[in-house]
Image (cartoon, rainbow, N blue to C red; front, side, top):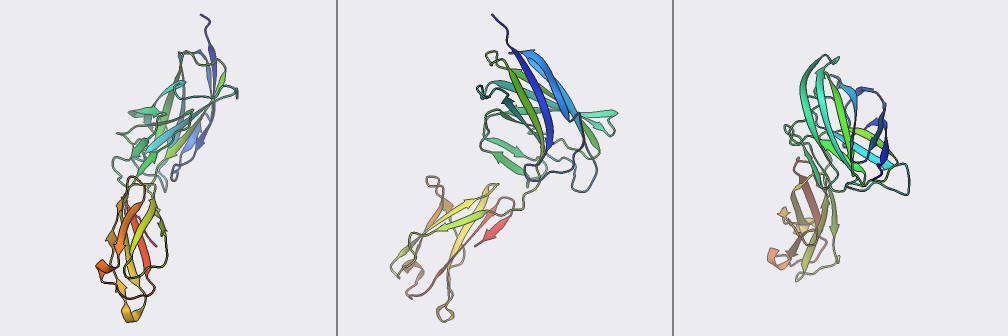
Length: 278
């Protein structure tokens, strides 16, 4: 059987953020090369970076490494199952003389991938789609960035024995998750705009957010001061079948017999307490 030789080239290490990035410095080396290895074997490389004690950085900041593998031959793209990755980080006091932590990191290419900071409930993130050739490496139990630390990261790559021989490029992005302050997005859909006192208004709300939704409510009001009406906030539940938050507002049940202009308001809050009203 003929052996298959793969050339793996590790390109630039990029520093970006899933939500927002802290300050990571002294990435070394910036460009790495992994030597040739036989398909089915394993190749390993290392790099390091510092997490300084500066404004915006904090202890126990959750770190995720996104690894992208691409074929330099456009005829042979990378598919799920072509590679397996393992990563671990060794943490030192600056400037790197005393090691005090070794942190294994799981590398996954299968969605959904859920990140949740152990000590910070406002830091949660879900990846619902992972592209071919992309891995997310993280530790679900330990969130590794510590102030005034140097992290030395070891990345090991193994391949499927049947993988096409050739050159592949690897890029590594260091992602730091931070708290989210954005409220949910709300869209109200009404099938009609004119109603009388015998009608029922179908309320249909589309609510999207980075984090799980805690509550969705609506209310009906009449801005006419002579016959002012306010239903108060009415909680509405998600219809799993349609994906909308749905309810039916019956005019007669609420004693509304006066024709006029009525306003529909809606509000939604996520689990972090970020709310939007419209």
